[in-house]
Length: 364
Image (tube, rainbow, N blue to C red; front, side, top):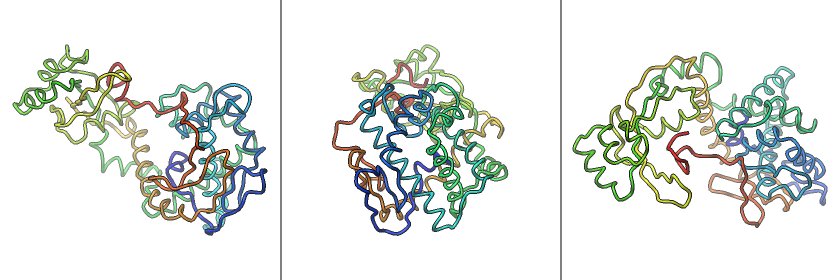
């Protein structure tokens, strides 16, 4: 899966560094490279196609360019993010071809195209971006050489994931089995919230220990508008884009109780921070058809976690060379990656928006 790739394996074929051929190569990985001209054409395609820009920025979780004409509209962070994705794709494809001796078939490429379109749609949903057009139209807007490379790299990554011993294959039977085993993770959740000021947190905790109900606690301490209804906030199906966050915020707390420790919540940027407490007031079992989207997402996350262990081992020896204009290849807390050049950090409209940060209400 392409989303898995972003967290996944940047495989190594040998540990030697491959030099850049003067200024004509932007990125080189284990002998495979992207020329300066090709790299610039890819960046220009993001600038000129709003749909492609939106979907691919969602995938990278940063704005790859500013909309407009001219190279000066590309952000330093965007160049580095794109260089990092290109390094990943090149490394995975080379590893599958050389180490695993596998070249994607026509059928695999067709499947990879559909999978990549699905990953682009999922990325846009998860980053809360409303992208113009469809993922298929975004792929069609890519330069032909890039589109072919992206689809092949997607196919190679899917093959690689299938070869990891700890991964769960995304087959109908495996998805069904995983859902059956973890059925309670996909209940429809009706929730109440309490947004508590820092000055009232101690009193809230004391009242909670006395056994006051969720509704009473919310009415007495919450500053959220839902306090008038005893904190009742609504119900979330597994198909809801907010479901994963709601489920995580509830955690393992029993139905009808707020967790003992709240989340840090800042409704207004630069404003005061509150404690956010989320309680499940009811749980209703869902069917696999209702929960399939989040089940697949959970399996992908598990697969990515397994793959990270592989990535950490093989990236340390990756043969990567990068034009310093686009960043530098170094070691981060999560493993080797492309770092932004020594410029002030830049941001764009495609950054992830967390549900429990600056917003007028805890869940959107």
